[in-house]
Length: 329
Image (tube, rainbow, N blue to C red; front, side, top):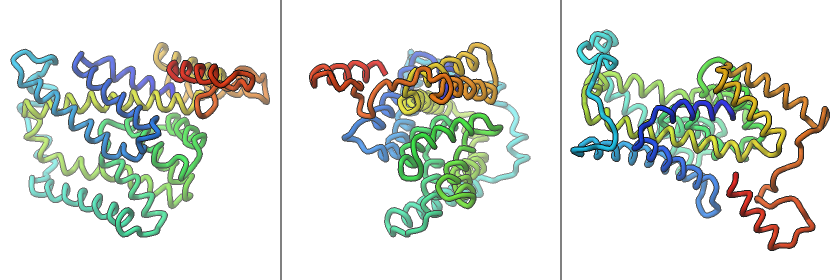
């Protein structure tokens, strides 16, 4: 999870003051959804997209103010403002882009209806629906999708430890973090499950890229569109920050875990060590500290419900300790 922290650090360092507030807000919402008994974790499938939309609306409104809180730039050379050659060479007209959008939306609606309304019982359809739905409503890259993936697959498809082990494996491999979908599908239903999960999570992004290209040639010149993207990006970065907190809570169970995390994070951020090397070093340190080796740092921090492991404490002190340590974590 140190590499997820590194990604969040890199993204957050580029935000201005308004974007930081947007990122903080979305992060708090995501953390609450994943840690409240009265809120179903599955609600993230509509709360997260709503957060992204609200983030875009905030920056759009701010950009219209006489003295906005953020800085909004006009199209520059970085946007290739005066040359549409690349988009013309791709050769996708507007009507084709609109049709591709309809295909994406139609597939999304169909799989949701089959699984949730018609209640078709097919494990591969279940895998595809879960991954396609998540891939369709998440904006901002692989780290953003982690909280929602964890909510969907743990414990129905796999254990928490299997999820975290797969995350480490995916981080150490070349390619985008979305490759993690193949691991999740494989653990649940073997090689066929891996292929279905891969297509489900990658499919929406590929479809939407081709759907958006003809519209992007025009939208990239639009001042308001750029302002909206600024808010959406900031909100998505906040979801990455929430992933850091949620994964920390799941993965760091004792001092040995925390020591491995600290070393890997230092290597990644301070020394710029590549992900596979960080994971290898972390694995070596974890093996040395393991109960079968030196057996160091293995005392659990807390019970699953947040109560300190001390049967001799009375009920009042135990609850007070639980409150204190839960706040610190």
